[in-house]
Image 1 (spheres, one colour):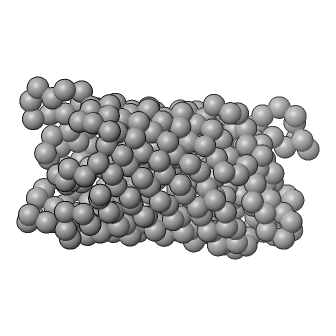
Image 2 (cartoon, rainbow, N blue to C red):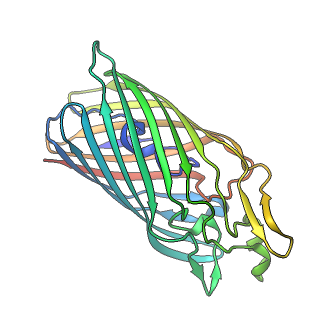
Length: 292
């Protein structure tokens, strides 16, 4: 079983891809892995979120590996329900030749949206808290230094496709609840940088636990457009800044080919406003991985 205290998080995807994901014990030599993730959690305004994903990893050599991940999302809250495919994440990782017990690796990837970030309920555009995708193409890059116990990682994720096609404005809903959500019409999200530190402690030959910290800095204030106010982008005050999360992981290897897991996480510092809808007050992520 694998349990991780995952970020709570303002994670646009890069926290869990390539060498930026919190490390677990994996000494098997199989070249391929197939993983299924079943995250459930609560977001802003107590929106319930279920975000299943399937991931394929291929180890081409001792130095090169690639990863592909497909996500979907179901969200339910006081403005309605929404279901849809999310994003495709593609990444490659290169491991430098290790001259000691420490290993250095670099990852490069992309996030490709499967919708425009404008799912609706009863014909009205829902806020980003309900969307299955941010609706943008992003580039992702990062590096990691690890040994058998420690991991130090840094990453960067940057949208490159401009605004999404979300049309949510609180005034368009005849509901007081809608005004609890930030406006996100033609939402333009800024980039993020990540810093992760974690420590893994073997408990038995099959069980290990990991704890650490994950910080994400949102590089600028996001913007939206409200034609009733201005045709120019309007900055969302308080949307830049730091999210800090406590993380952890316990790994249980059932066989050399099969492991199972459960992830959970809590943020301790969040940005004042999170218009991207990514913040989770708590998240639990069952996981199963086959190696072949």
